[in-house]
Amino acid sequence: METMPNNNGKSFYVTTPIFYVNDAPHIGHAYTEVASDVLARWHRQRGENSFLLTGTDEHGEKILRTAAANKTTPQQWADKLVEEAWLPLLETIDIKNQDFIRTTEPRHEKAVQKFLQHLYDTGFIYRGSYEGNYCVGCEEYKTEADLIEGEGAFSGQAVCAIHSKPVEKLQETNYFFKLSEFEDKLLAHYEANAKFIQPESARNEVVSFVRRGLEDLSISRSKEKFDWGIDIPWDDSHITYVWFDALLNYITAIGYGEDTDEARAKFASLWPASVQVVGKDILRFHAVIWPAMLMAAGLEPANQIFGHGWLLVGGEKMSKSKLTGIAPSQITDTFGSDAFRYYFMKAIAFGQDGSFSWEDLSARYQAELANGFGNLASRAIAMIHKYFDSVLPAGTDFTEADLQVQNIAATAVKNANSAIDDVAIQDAISSIWTLVDELNNYITVQEPWVLAKDEANRARLGTVLNTTAEGLRILAVLLNPITPKATAKLWAALGSGLGELDAQPLNEAAAWGQLKPGNVLNVLEPLFPRIETDTESK
Ligand code: MSP
Image 1 (cartoon, protein in one colour):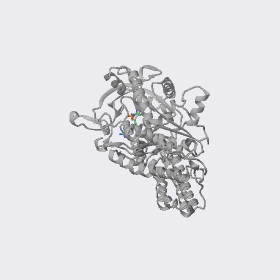
Image 2: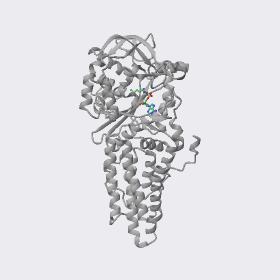
Image 3: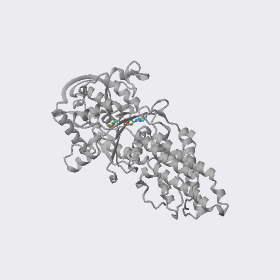
Image 4: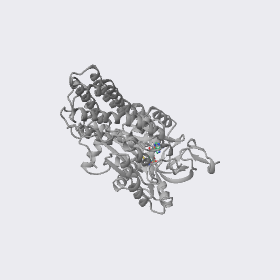
């Protein structure tokens, strides 16, 4: 897959969690992907060397059991799910990733073994024994505080608070990572890097968790129990604990452990990651265990771990195992991938939980995308076709109203940019929408259709339509990371002569007058077509 040229020497490396291949994706998974993709595209549009990594987590007991239940081998099961479900998801929601890592690939397995060997040789891994309550759904030992009273078939038993299923008592002799040694170092790191864990609520939760004290972490499982994982390099009767294996994907994908100059250069240019996007259920793995692993290996932690909220259905985390999962294609088949991306990024403040509803999606599609943005573009472009024979008129003698559009555009670019720096995607969209609203208001007040009635107003009519077209150009650049299909259509219609939309520098988007008068505009394909559907029946 391609990487953009490194225009200003700045790298932006963003990662998604790697997804378990035990089941097909639902909109909760797609949510993580879209947010990461929007960030990656935004930084790329700024001219940075932006790299989005995603992939699949294929080892562990959960996958092994699913494969067995489907009467196949775990490798065949993983291959099938990757081909039939996880790679197609990227198309469904229009993800532009630079790499896709699978934890069963040799590049990953070899590098994981190198990492383990290094930690073993430097004394961070030792042999010991452990007894605890294991949740296969989470692939994690649970403390008493993580368990709740079961209901229904499991009443009277302690169940995992996330999966509502009983935990299993495990007693094992295996290898341990000295996580407890990192308590102070982690707390010092959180203290010195106030933005390392975001949002604030996530940071507070992690800090108080670490303050309560850390135990060493079991990082291997005996092959007597099951053997679907990466061999411990110095003891082939054990395999690597799936989370220890999985977390390393973020560095094995970018050349860690590979002995070539090219791999070393790639690693040096991308690590530490700029932001690692994770759901809040897997925050502790990423904000506690993962940085400790890196510190043990002498590597820097990522710049930021961002823990987003859950999509809720009926007040509970949407999940396939609880049968509340909605497939992303159920939404995109009707509304398209742009609407999917826009809706989840706008309707839910990134970092908080949010409830999905068909009614809300449908209402926002109509009001914000179709009426707000789509109609604005189609009306303005249609008027240039009609009144100026498709040729972009010049803008001259700017009035207060014209200058206000220019000012609002400049502020929108500035505010949206800083919202993205804060990973506040919803705020970035709101800032962009100030320009959508302003342009709609501008057309209403300027009444170009009235100006068109009198030849004496020809120059003024030209200025109004030129101003609107410039506004649309800026919207195309700003919205390209969020609704790339619609903006591609808009760009084609503007016939700007400015080259590829992806190559337009976002930071300079508001510099006025980039469209050249005399350019010929093309017909605009509908951006957000009317949807003939009964959303009630969904
Ligand atoms: N394989 C691990 C991650 C390993 S990363 C080194 C895993 N996989 S997962 O497939 O179960 O979940 C992947 C991501 O999807 C997590 O960030 C999780 O929070 C997210 N979501 C799963 N259900 C979700 C919702 N209902 N809402 C929002 N995100 C959700 O965990």
